[in-house]
Length: 219
Image 1 (cartoon, rainbow, N blue to C red):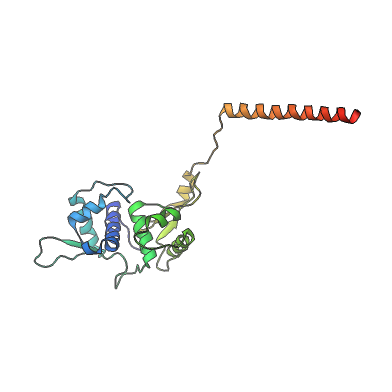
Image 2 (cartoon, rainbow, N blue to C red; image 1 turned 45 degrees about the horizontal axis):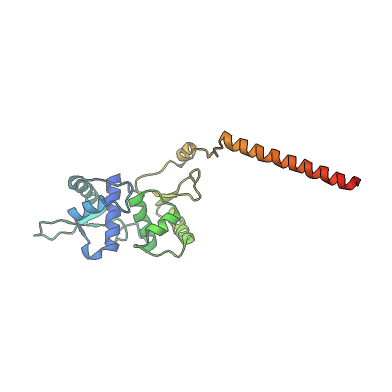
């Protein structure tokens, strides 16, 4: 896969994919609408504060790489932008609705667990359960044209592994595994003392029970 997006470019593409599905009446987006979408506080991680100039720089770069188009008419003063990132006639990325939703979610929010993806894509597609999300992620990780997602090492204290898109370059999994902190259970000295006292009490009770049993046998 030859796509490698900057953080701003990933945000721009993610917003265009999202708005194409959720607000089709207002798509393609004007520069102002696209900037507002990029800086949206909900469903974005991290939250950004991009200027229109910064968004315009990203759109210019994406148009030059044929990942976006300016859909404005010849005599219009307002540019309107449409992505050509996936599901285009000549593009290599041909996604199902579920795959597109996952790609969009990862572009907008970074690494996510299957459970988080299922919850956060409910406006873009439908998943029956988390296992279905995992199955689609596995398909995307084994894409014949090149993997587009990767499973990250499970973090200490987390039940599920997270997945990340590969549209911004390869991820050094070995480095992540080496840097992962070892999970340790912190136990205070007072907890140790409480446990010891509990065990000592149980021993005393057992001795008393044994003494009573012996007395009964002798009698």
